[in-house]
Image 1 (tube, helix red, strand yellow):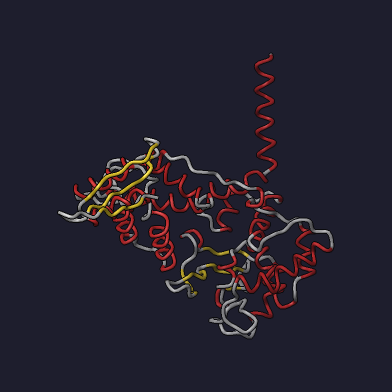
Image 2 (cartoon, rainbow, N blue to C red):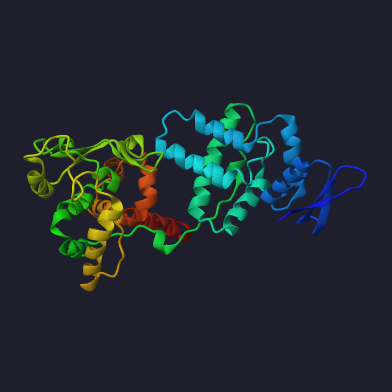
Length: 376
């Protein structure tokens, strides 16, 4: 880190010497100021930008040009969002304050280039930030730069040329359960939430969507019976939960229910008001993810593992399992995408495409025909 050495003077004001080791020069450098404010400003800029005097100097010059900084542009982008949830705004604000302001924040938005962004990514990695965190913050920066283009602060988006860390790990991949493996989990599931667990795997709904379903959302008399997914639990500004929109616009959907699940749901809707939650917590109200995981899901998985289950499935893997079962039965990618509430079939294909054996076989057959053609 840079340091400031105060040098007293007998005849004049104090002098403030800023010292740092510049990575580009490879040796210790120093500049002396009469103003303590200027010295402190340079020290902060050096510390925020890897002790690079060039970047720090650019930031100081940019401030004099009256060009909006990265911090100002990202903040303006957040303020211009039309339909963000309270939780989304809070998340973006945290990203800005924690991951952008200390490093890129002071740089004029029209000066940011691939060097700044690459240095920022490397600094995030040194701090131990995960690839997912870097990707999420980069996405915010990318969108903010698009806003900067629209507002004519700059002409291009430097985020398009940046290579992001993949961070791919085997444990991050979706886990798919066979029918037998799911049966083992159901054997260990406590009676109170057997129907809920079956609902998750038979509808492919997200946990926050399934726990937001009310009795009125279920229509067991329709042909086929359906459940309307039109809301999900969200986090508020003070971390409180509230019912808001689904994850995406496509997430608002109607899901058909299979006859077996209909039979399980009849007792849950027969004598209850339409406004009541279909799957409430044991004492009523919202069923929290952490409560279900700790008290019901984890013990059921442990019991299943004692009977031979080798996987460690998460609750969300019931959604992946639902998709894999549909693929095994030959359901089209388009139908699966709509049922899961994906914004496009490309999302569905990216996650589950490798499970489509016919598509893989078709590709192999096509290559075989080509290989024979050039040998004839």
